Length: 99
Image (cartoon, rainbow, N blue to C red; front, top):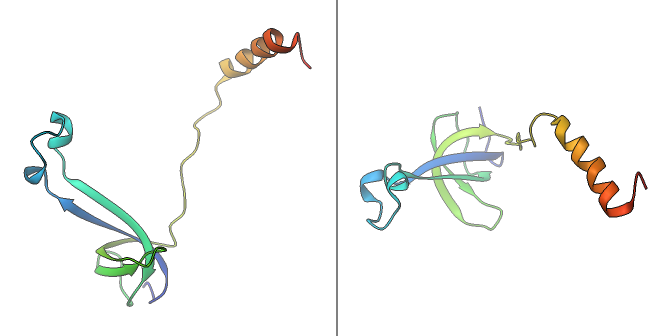
């Protein structure tokens, strides 16, 4: 249960695929225009409920509640051993060694 005032993320389809502009690239025109927004929940709700949030810029947005206390989960991926060799080569070229 999410409480009023919780920091949450919502999702909404802004425009379905049929409503996309004819000038959109073909692959873009095949999918809906979607929006994910974070903000403060304006009333108690459960995941999956239609809700309103107030964003950090004081806009009121509505959509489906998908996450409470969202956080970043991206990374720069797995270790790439080749980058260590590139680093060594660049140091040699630029600075003449391991300086």
